[in-house]
Image 1 (tube, rainbow, N blue to C red):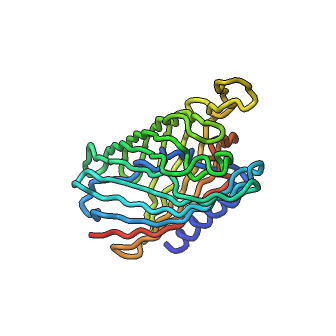
Image 2: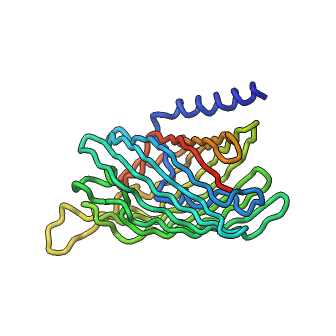
Image 3: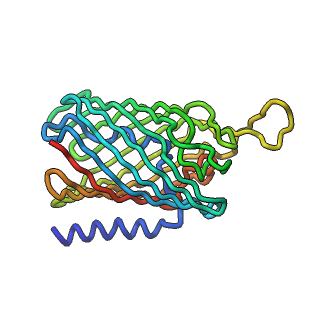
Length: 290
């Protein structure tokens, strides 16, 4: 058993190092953060609180480093209904300057629609609220702590035994107040996952397919006139395919440690919305309260 655990962890670490210089991200305007967890289990604690740290970097052209400290909570208000929230404090540092501040708040309501001994179907409806600054120091979006739009997020997740499948949709809000006056396209997410249970470890690789359904639209800074004119950014609607791996270690009934990281299979190179990462990894702790 110990040999198997070491082999699996070594494979995951080796894969991450092999792809460290390519692009990895989950969009992530928020669609990857809503849903994706099973609800309605009889032994689940009513309140789960988490704190985590995430580090990432953008591509070589931007050369922006990201530090994010995130607090989150899931509260089961009913046996098959839960409320989920997540709020980060973000720090961005690059050649153009340093920016820090509260990021965008993500809220969702998760509802179990069906459950039997082997399978379950869950639905989530959420929102990403523009609580973060999106135009500090008139810097590009890669330096901003928030996206500057209020978005609506929908998710549907089905699990059978240890297999999981999900679909999500993020409806992007209005144009933001950044110097570029960005209007993002909507995001479509397809998710497939599998849980490996090894002693106190749960290892969950997830294949994430994210399609930007419309090009990013920004103000044309070269245009002259009393009324702003706008233009689409070429190739800003590219597809992203990532392998996101989550590892959880159950210390006891109340505490667990978790880590996650992503590697790309298909990369999205246009970074006008500031979401592209060359590498991203998180480490955190979760407290479950009875």
